[in-house]
Length: 177
Image (cartoon, rainbow, N blue to C red; front, side, top):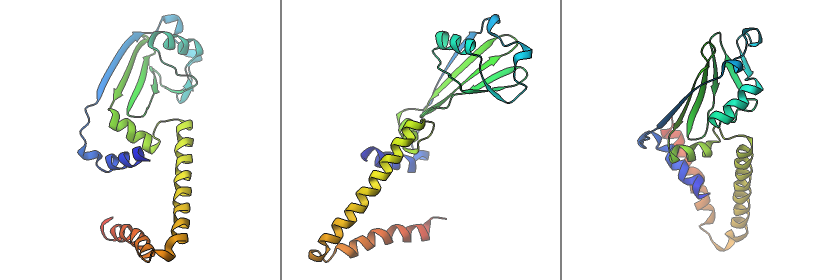
């Protein structure tokens, strides 16, 4: 919950937090035997790379592409590889076999902000933050029940709860456009 609160602050002040992205580029050449023959290439659109090409990329560039869809054009294959806290992509020239793989790392603040939002994190993380959100709702609901149980002995309870609802509502109505 502490991490969620901190990343809420960093997200609210993202424009004020300077990031120095680190870009790493690697180049290689795909062996001619692994270049897809023109007849076997998808006519535009998206399709995964052939298994042999994926295996070679996994061995040579340590890239696990699995069945990730690649964008095929007449002269290039492009694979977007978004990730939390950065970005990455792979390009294969279909004439020469030239490969360019670029990775951008925007740092820990960006990484944690993307985890907060569930951006490019995968299904397991999305399920985790959904379960965490449900747990927070249960925590809030049981907290309200505890307030109801003890409110009789504490006269300031319901006015404070009302202020807790009213202040954000008034701020939103007056200052959020």
